[in-house]
Image 1: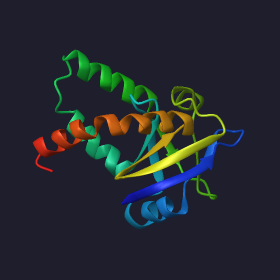
Image 2 (image 1 turned 90 degrees about the horizontal axis):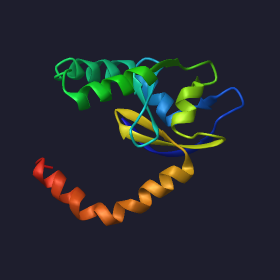
Image 3 (image 1 turned 60 degrees about the vertical axis):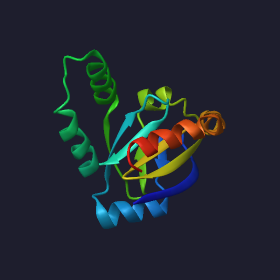
Image 4 (image 1 turned 180 degrees about the vertical axis):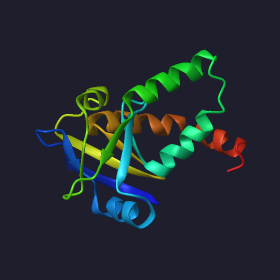
Length: 147
């Protein structure tokens, strides 16, 4: 399970080092290859291959004639890139991915159970500043889902 928050940098070639704790999870539970794609929150999401495949199995059952489904599929598949870890535990983030998430030098990686989010620190701070305003709604939504 991916847990925690880590700050890293993107090098001049667009590579980013995967935190050691995340690499341990990849080695122990998955293969050392990620699918990285864009997210609507202007961040990136990195999935181990098997988690990406699970997501795609669910996606195959969606009504593809529905506009929102079609838009999500187009968005997520067009950005999706296979990113194997190199010997130093880094992945290469393509320019379209970096541009979408507005990644420059510094990044923040968040472990979210079965996936990793990659954020521009400023954008993440803005997103997190909105959370207290939504705590009640978040609680209601989770309760409605039986959580």
